[in-house]
Structures are given as C-alpha cells and as structure tokens.
Amino acid sequence: MGHAHDREPQRDLPPGMAEQLDLPHSGMATFGHRPFLTETAQLDSWRPDVAIVGAPFDVGTTNRPGARFGPRAIRATAYEPGTYHMDLGLEIFDWLEVVDFGDAYCPHGQTEVSHANIRERVAAVASRGIVPVVLGGDHSITWPAATAVADVHGYGNVGIVHFDAHADTADTIEGNLASHGTPMRRLIESGAVPGTHFVQVGLRGYWPPQDTFEWMLEQGMTWHTMQEIWERGFQEVMRDAVAEALAKADKLYVSVDIDVLDPAHAPGTGTPEPGGITSADLLRMVRRLCYEHDVAGVDVVEVAPAYDHAELTVNAAHRVVFEALAGMAARRRDAAGAQPGPPAR
Image (cartoon, rainbow, N blue to C red; front, top):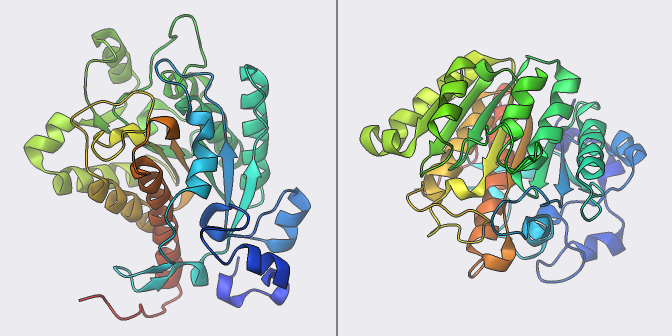
C-alpha cells in the first residue's frame, strides 16, 4: 500500500466537506478532522492505512458508567493542535492516510449484539489491510475488537501490549463473562491471543486477587507493575516491555485503558486508581511501540467524559491515538528512506 502523499486525487475533499473539517471549533466532529466514511465500499475506494472506529459501549462497567460517550468526546472536545510532530520531524498525514469510519452500532443494554457489531466493524477494516484504531467504550470492547484482528491475522499471531491499572483477567465479575474486568481472559481462553503473547504495563492497586495472578502465571503472561516502574524507572521497564512485545508475535495490538494514567492526568474514567504513570511516559511508549512493531490494531478505552475536568482525560486519550499514528507514520517514512524534517531544538 502506497504512502498518503503518493495517493491518487480521489482523496481530495469536495469544497463543502473541506470547509466543514477546516476549523476545530465548528463543523462535523471527526477524529483529527479526518474524512468521515460510513460504508465499506468507501474504504475500498479510499484505501486508507488507518481507520478510526468508535465503540460506544459501557454495559460492562463495574463502577462509574459513561464510557459510551468516550468516542464522541475524543472526536469533539479534544484540542486539535496540528499534525506536525516536532520530535519526529514528521507531518503525520503525509505518510499515513487516516479516515474516520464512524461507530459500531451498540444498542442500549444489548451486550451480545453490541460486541458482535464491534467485531464486525473492526473486521471490515482489518480484513482490507487497514489498521483499526478503536475508541471505547469500556474495556470489554477489546474482546471483540482484538478477536476481529486475530481473525484476520491468525490466532496466535497477534501479541498485545496492554496498559492498565488492572489486569482485566477475571473469569467472571458478578456472573458477567463480558465485564470490562474480563476481556483478556476471554481472549486467552478463546485462543485468539495466547497468554504468552501478553505484556501488561502499569498494574497497581488491590485487584485482581492472588488466585487470578496465579492463573496469569500459568498462562505465561508478562506484566510490569507500578512498583517495578517506581523501583527500576520507566525507561528501563519500557525497554523490557518493547523487547518482550517484539518477541511475542508477528503482529502487535496495543490496548490502552486510560486509567493506567494517574487520576491527576486522567480523572475522567470509571475506575480511577491513584499512583499511575504520567501522560508523558505513556505517550512516548505508545509512539515507540507503533514505530518499532508491525501494529495490527490499537484501542483506547475507559474515557468517561462526565467525570473529566478541563478535558484532561479526553486530551490525553486523543494524544495517545496521535502518538500511535505518529509512530506508524515514522515507521513508513524511515522504511522509505526519507529524511526527517528539522528537529526542534
């Protein structure tokens, strides 16, 4: 697939649509002011590298609901700073064609229907060689989204780097197999992503209990707690986590629960857990993962804007996606042998 700047003129927008996407405070809210597509035939015509997919579902939430409003808030209320990455010397959308493919249909209270629709919409993207970037929604959406990616690339061929305060490997929570605390267990038990293919970063707090961690050990999972990050430093842990991810599988899926951040950086989430990482550390690690690996999917979940303050959480989630895109774009640029722009000094 060619680079965005090599594309045919088909990607040019009609004047009316261009005006709608021109100002950050007006017009239609799409992620990063990218073109809005609704049909798979449009994906075939545009041939983008990445498609944003919303998963506005939060029926799996155990504490504070509201993550169903996350996709809309990330699109509509994040500050849009521009698209030139000063650290990478990169105009992101010169190297990566990105579209907004709207939301999966998630009707109220219907978990099986919603998850099936999420899986179907993500599969429509991934099956065309397009990288899906999924905006949650609670973390249960990773079960259908990552399964759809594994359906395309093969069970056991996808590894997951999972940023979270919580392991999300419970068997059930209050009898619910599809809770936001169970998606990683479902992926492992289904065979879509084996336990040996997981690297988790940022775990802390008081859940899950010991027997769950014993099960995780039996599955061959790898995790790095906040205590380890505090003792060794984030740079050291980051180097290990990136290397571990590379050794796990050919394709990488990155799942970011925004509660991996300390609530000082991301108060707008359903299960805030003090003592987390900073947004500076998270953004740089996501960028590095997406630069060094063949990324097959990304999700950012658990943004609950009703509990946010000054759009701190919304902006952090938005930048996680932008750093993922920047890493993918830089990977393409460097593979093509192009020179970076002037560095910021």
